Image 1 (cartoon, helix red, strand yellow):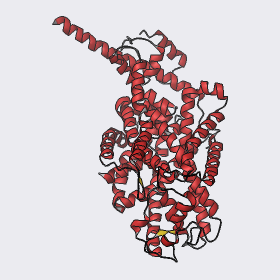
Image 2 (cartoon, rainbow, N blue to C red):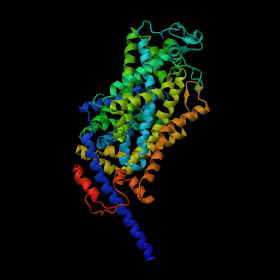
Image 3 (tube, rainbow, N blue to C red):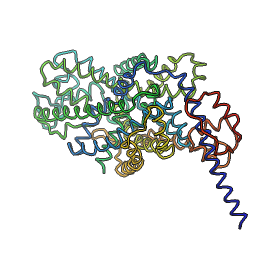
Image 4 (cartoon, one colour):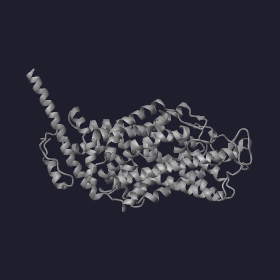
Length: 566
């Protein structure tokens, strides 16, 4: 019995030593990597550039269409209560957290999550995957904005009346003509002129060549704006939380990517408040505008408000245009609106493409530049692939593809990604370590409000995730119900990003060396993968060794690593 007890005691001692040794050497590797990144990573030329880029990314088309619709569908003003609570408890704290991670580690989301928690490195890959999927269909909205912009330079506007070749006279309603079975003139312009839509997902029809050309133009604009890099550019509660994630952009990896180009002493709190408050103000303002338009349109064309409030692009490309035709000098307002829409979409698209480019270069810069020679060709490759994947969206049935992608990407996957990201940072990496990192950059720890919210966030997001599953509603477009195989395709799209999380867990545990217990310790130790790539076996460094302070020379740290016995 004594031998067994002694053996168990020795195992516990060795386990503690292993953990402490991993922590010590992980800190050494962290300091070495951070110094190396600081020497080679480009930065924003001025501090205000990141703030403006962050605002441009977070204030997007979702503020104009998704927020007003969710507010309407969830009880109007009552929706604002859970929205602002979620905004305060999750939105602002998690935005601060993502900016801190990128600014401290100075890498994109893939490398950052791999360093913070090797076991959940797949979360970083998942954020890149979801951003890339979104970039393939998000540019379609920019195409529609350009299409409307081109057609706005005429008086009267083409959706002003029902006297057009694409109108179905029997069901068309404008400010002059009223039918018992009503579809607004702007709705018919969108359905039968812009989309020329088919009856469902199983009939994609022909290519819409005008939209195809505009899709090429949109990607050309995106490429030339980012190719030089950053130096150039209950159910209601669930809806509220999902809107906060979507609106600010939490969980998509773009904020980590952009903040990785910040200087270490950049004021994180200032940027967080500027981005989040501007985003919220834009959403509220858009809500006032759209509800005013709802009431005015309902009175003018004698249609109940319930029939006007539509989800997705219909809100932007049906309700707003319909409101313009009742205004004086309507083409002027239409042109200004669609120019605004174009810039809102482009800012967000830039960030989604940039996160893929940054992650590719962080992981494979040597290999990519060996064959492609220049970063500009890497950006070109990403844009070309995303363009090709987006081609189904510009067919006559493309609206059904668009709605399917948006539902399962922006509304289903994002909550799961946010949960695992918070688990990796707040639970495994740890709030004390994160606070110490922030203090190292800014000279002081984050305030008590942020620390308490970070402590609560895993539980809050877990509750939201459970309700997302319980209250899940299959995708639909208007009155069209997607077939079962379409729903199945949607889940494939959702798992295209989520699958990287379990893949990352399995790959990490198979890659590390030692017993399962030792591998698990390393996989939950920050910089565990970097540590393991430099060493073999199990660490036996004594706990009495001193952890070097950040800022020590790489040569000193490498010497310590070399002399650490395993």
